[in-house]
Length: 248
Figure 1 (cartoon, helix red, strand yellow):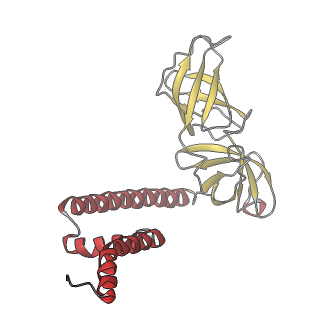
Figure 2 (cartoon, one colour):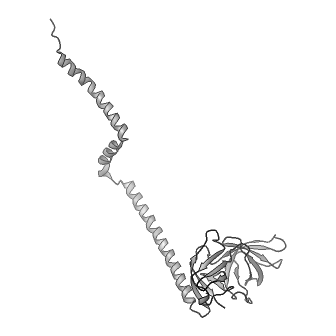
Figure 3 (spheres, one colour):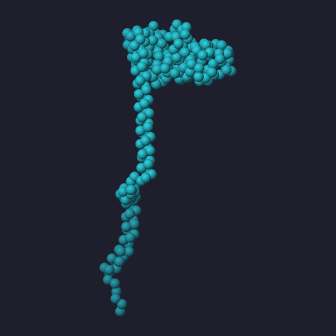
C-alpha cells in the first residue's frame, strides 16, 4: 500500500506554492500605495556612488559659469547706473541745476508723468526743464513746497520744438506714449537721415539751449505735408530714478 501524505505536510506545500504569488501581490500593493517611492529610494541608494556623472558634472559647471556671468553683467550694469547718478549729482552742483529723486510713478501714467521729492522750496517752478542721464526727459508741470510733478516728453500729445544740428533744420517733437516720439518737420526737404542727433534749439527761451534729446531712428519722406521721423530718446524715462532740474 502506497504511503499517504499527512494533512499538515499537504497544507504547508500548498502555502509554499502560493508564497511567490503572495509576494508579487504584496509588492504591487506596496508600489500602489507608496507611488513608487520605495523603488526610487532604492535606485538612489544604488546609484549614489556614481553621482555626479561626467555629463552631469559638465552641466553643473556650465550652469554655474552662466550664473556667474549673468551676476557679473548685473553688477556691471548697476555700477554704471550708480556712476551715472553720481555724475548727475555732481553736475547738479551748478547754481541753476538741482538734483532730485523720483519718488512716485503711476502704472497708468508711466509714460506721462513722474513725481519728484523736491519742490518750490528748492526753487522749482512750472516750466523748468528736467534732465536725465543723457538728455532732456520733460518739464515740470506743477509744484508743491516739497514735491514736483514732471510731464514727460513721452506723454501723448506733448510737443516741444527741437533742432537738428547736422542739417540745421527745425521740427516739432510729439510724444506718443512710448520711448519713441514723432518728429514733424517744417521744411519739405529737411535733409535728415537715421542717426542724426536731435537737440533743443540753440535759440530756445522756454528750454535750455543745445540740450541732447534723442536720435533719429527712421524717416518717412512720403508723409504729407512734410516728412516725419521716429526719434529714440537718449535718456530712458521708463527706468529713471534720479533727475536734474534746471531752474530758471
